[in-house]
Length: 213
Image 1 (cartoon, one colour):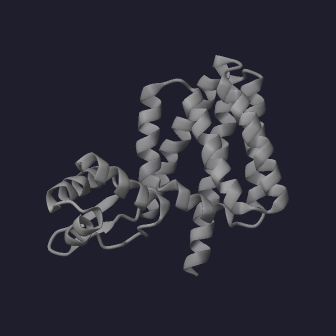
Image 2: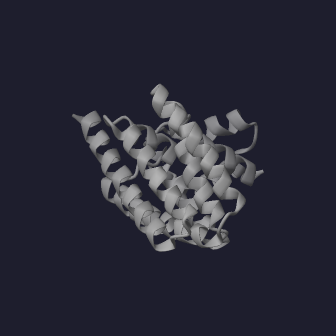
Image 3: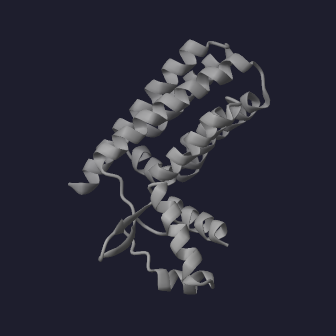
């Protein structure tokens, strides 16, 4: 029961259905899920450990909002993990994930041509996910899943892609990564993937600054 509640709450936070800073009332959630407050309390504790929920003593429980420093640290870890994943995938050769990446790029190119940022954002998530799965390293993938949950990346990527010209830049960077993976150039794939994550981080920060202005 607690695991089901935690997973549903996790997805609601990651998708943005529960926006950042939202208040999380145990009573209201127990009514929403039709369960007692005990599994709600346990689920919130789990999500607090994962960095998705913030508990303020004598104030309440809220959807966590990473600080600028925390975002930077999370993106540094994202860069390391995805760079390593691209390297490992390149060394594996022509595995099914590479074919799926090629199909992803065709769909992404079409989304960029159409100016469909929403569709492209979904394809970005799939592209990165395929690289991590294709690395075939369960420990790397487990750390990556936790990291992406803390970032609530589905929400952030839209801010990053809202920057003028970022759609085309991101698509070009993905092509470079895939070309190096196809060429079995592990060193090159890792380097370019890390550069791509840094560029995404810079675009995100710039987009967040504009929204605050």
